[in-house]
Amino acid sequence: MDRKTRKQLVEGLNRDATLIAARFSLRYRAVEADRANATSRYGICYSDGTIRIRLRHATTGRPLKYSSLVNTLCHELAHLRHFNHGPRFKDFYLRILAYAREAEIYQPSRPRRAASPPALAPRAEPAPPPPASPPRRATPPQPAPGGGAVQLDLFA
Image (cartoon, rainbow, N blue to C red; front, side, top):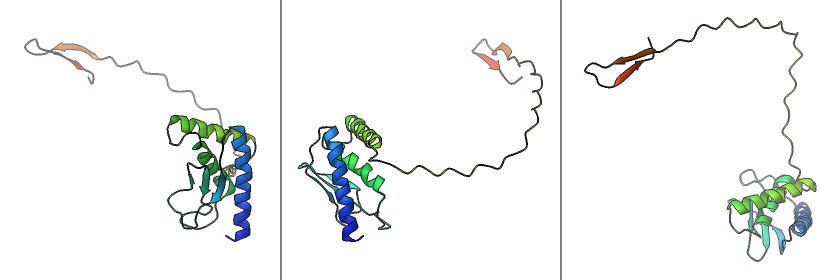
């Protein structure tokens, strides 16, 4: 990734972070690109408000989609309020992500739909089901030899 592209991505993330942070009364210091060889995480939030986001895929080295970067940004912004991954963090992260969608900051691609199957000739009416046979009844309990426990014969 060239410097110009990297700079544009980081500027866009900072712009979007400013909008999201203002909406949720969060204070962050800066959004920065993580080091090029970072492979164990997509982003990290430091206690001083610095957020670092990995811009490339860990194994292929290809640039990540902007929507993936925004998703990571929302996750890291949620850590500014909850510095863990507990239930309150998850709820807050989902609220931030929902706002980012509404504000059209987070726009994940929609899965491709399979091609429609070719039109088929209309089917004939299905045949009515055969009449139901009467339910089988269990054999009444038989006393066990010697007057012990009763055994049901369900498979007579």
